Image (cartoon, rainbow, N blue to C red; front, side, top):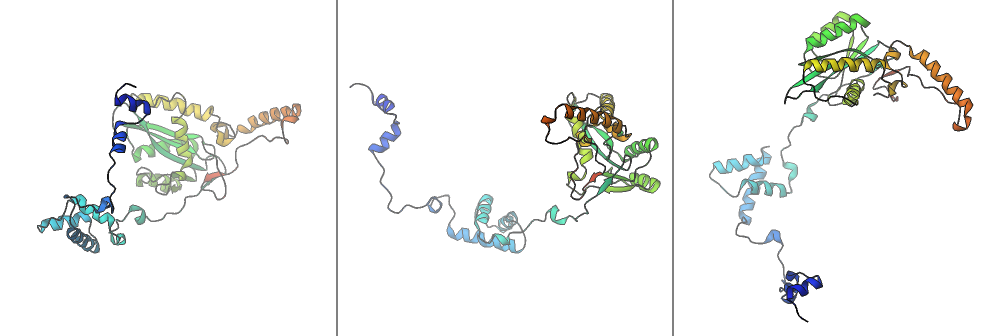
Length: 328
């Protein structure tokens, strides 16, 4: 048999390193030392480790950080190990309960009442919000304002501007109220424009509108506005980026008309918001019901029981107890 050792090992499927160590095995250590306890030249001594632990615990007793204790020792001319070593030793200490606790914003928040908004007819309760509309320029966005009627889901006021400002919101509400009358309640999140004194004076003082606001960090408290913006941004053909403010305004004009008059909204039994707003849905419902019942008579075997034609809910709102409200 001829051939090199390399070829033979290749045929056998054994690496050269494996073959070498099999032929020259290392002697087994009788009392192996764990890696963490091996005496490397770079490892600090046990005495220095104890001194570092003492300084760290003394610092924790004074509610100061590991960095602070390290810096104080350094200022005193004491260098026992690197900053990273101090943090590593602090991590291994058993007395972790003594470590200073950083106060969080969550612990400082005042618990707010859950906002509850109820609507049993169009024009009774409005929800409004502002969303960013992207531009090609980094750090620059347009602001789309929108007021939604909670009961009908109809957009009753809107505008697109270069910035978010309370006086622009007031102008939007002035136009909406002049066209449709003032609602009983207006709900919004807790942004600066939503809680501004200018808007509060206009709505509450001049028109006796009750104001309702989200709890901090609870997006579900404003589902109708959030869902409405999602419908806009996920609609096929949404440009995503607008080259100019005029382009954004033209698109939003077209979108609002489509949404109010043509969009078959799943949250209001596939009627359009405009139909629920002016109650013309009742006539369309009659047409749907007759078609459904006629189909049922023709094919009763396709149904388990006589079908019912869905209609918009008679009561909707935000945070209603034991009631599920569909929004889109």
